[in-house]
Length: 298
Length: 331
Image 1: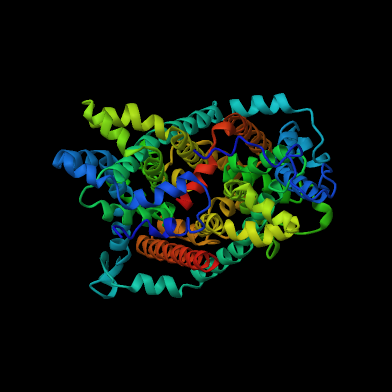
Image 2: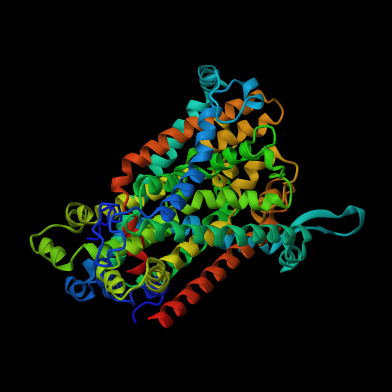
């Protein structure tokens, strides 16, 4: 398999081949450019983390990046706002992204496996449709999706946000690539000769083999759903069902009337960034983007 | 050739023949699933195939195919006065291509397409250029703080677009901005285009960098060492060897950046409360939303959706074609 992520090769310790020329001296220009890039990416995060500690008065009057005195008050204000709406939004986001990405990955894995390992009529048509799905942003379909869902009485429910995001053409495409490359036909034949049913073969043999790829699909889909805005914006009217993104937007939109809400929006943004960033740092080891670029090439 | 569909991405691929087990094995097997074995199993085996793809097919039909067909249907209908005179009744009828004609000649839609274009023209090349630059720098030997920089630049990917827009919105807002000293009106046109594009760049550069970096890492090291022995500097290696090798990955990242730019919505919508420069039809999807839910012109909204979806599809195919040609000529 191609796990290169775990091998930090290009560091200062890497042996440099032939041609002396200051063998072990650091290259400063690339280092500085990379650090500038890192600073560009970190500045907004640092700003929101420090701004979240400022009281509503301090937010507009004190120097940026200097911690203020209102952090605990802000937190209290945030979690008690509207009868605990913020906590609810966070739970909703976790539900949409958690359940959605799990179900979606299961569906993608089965479909990718079916496309890669079985010959059946209509397979080619499916692949063409799938490819169209990858290239056409589903979000341009949000309005017709809303109209169809409201025709069957589902608009405004949890389902209306969960269901349209379950099918993920790019995820299916990736799973098809993973199944083709990591599950040998011989292994499947051996399992069948041993009398294992198709479902059991899939679950007990193929899924473990595809697992690193599946984790990647899962993470991509989790972040995709967590970050989604337009779909819940169109589908939902009851604030109790909002995900975090939509809730924060609502806070900000109301804030243009009363600026105390700006403070809440800033604190809410800080609080919602922390768990995702922590999650990403922890999961970085399992995050196999190399499989993604392998997917394009393969 | 058994299927035409997957060939664009797989043809962008492994014509360099460099390493990558995925590459080597996938291409052939993706064209030819274990059909030979499968046939021995007879009808039962292909039935199992249907079983595995069935859930995805059901959802794909329900949430992709049906909405597309429904949007086309709606786009051909509209409310018209029938009966004539003061006694006319508003009624839904077939209006043919009138909605499309209205959409394509609507100055508001054209203006919103122009803004989307302006943002895309800034955001897509800058995202790709910066991602490529960082990926190449990470791959240069004897650079320090690689792990820290890589993680920091990837970090914004985990920040939802709405939250990113909110963060940058406050950094742009004169009352809270640390960049106030520059005197730039970040939230007024024309700087606004750059400001919105910047949010897209900030969110996208890390992910693209990682895709390109991993593509670079799958190139066998000996290629570079041979070049170094021949006296090539790191810049020459980057320009002559590394960049041509990551063209396929660059096509993928370009494609996703482009699709991302076409569906720009959350960023301007989130910035709206902070500035009066963003109208309710500032980008095309905002106009679709307004037509459908505020002005109740479902037919117009559907026609605009269809135009946007078709436009995305065409543009994506063009990018893939171009990348394919590029890959062929460079190998």
